[in-house]
Structures are given as structure tokens and as C-alpha cells.
Image (cartoon, rainbow, N blue to C red):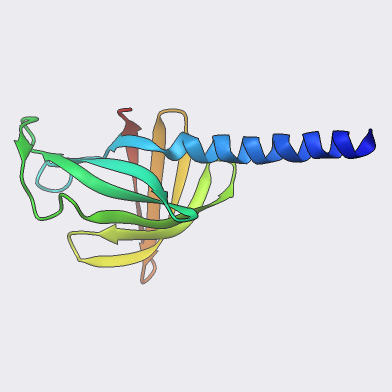
Length: 129
């Protein structure tokens, strides 16, 4: 009986962890860049982690535009560190550099943050799907 209860608790913990990871999965809209363009980023599993790829870009008038960044992976190897929190790498397309970054998911918002040489910045993305 005790083994059955332990197995049930272990299964509950595993399912809760998977449910937390699923909160980050989906399609997200970035904040506008310095050109007024926004991207749609698809966050999906990549191995044991999560990754995010720019799938579409839009100009300030909400017209779809083709940019060199569409198709680029900008969230790399994001691993859950606690409920709704992930750590990995973030690509900054403007500088073509990746840096240590974090994702914090809360409802339909996801804060992406990172630091380079002591200068830190963040964006809050909005869930589309």
C-alpha cells in the first residue's frame, strides 16, 4: 500500500513538472524592436529543453515582413529551474550574440531577460496561442 502511495506521489510530481513546462510552449509576440518590428516566436521542445524560433515578423503597421531573422532560433536550451522559470541562452539578433538568459512565465506573459558585460535588459512577450 505504501509503495502505491509513493508511486502516486511521484507520478503527480512528474505530471506537475510537465504541466509547468507546457506553460511556456506556444506562440509568443515579442516587444517591438527599435524599427518598430515585432516577431512571433514559437517555443517548442528541443531535446530535454525548450527553444524558441522566430516564425514571422511584422512592421509597425502590422504588415508581415520578410527579415533575415525569420527562421532563427533565439531561445536556446531553456531548462526549467523552478515553476515557471527557465535558464538557458538568448540570441540578440541585432548584435548576433547569444548570452545567458532567463524566461519567467506568468499566465499569458513571458519575461525574457539577460545580461552582457554587466548591462541587463528584458522584454515581456505576450502569448498568442
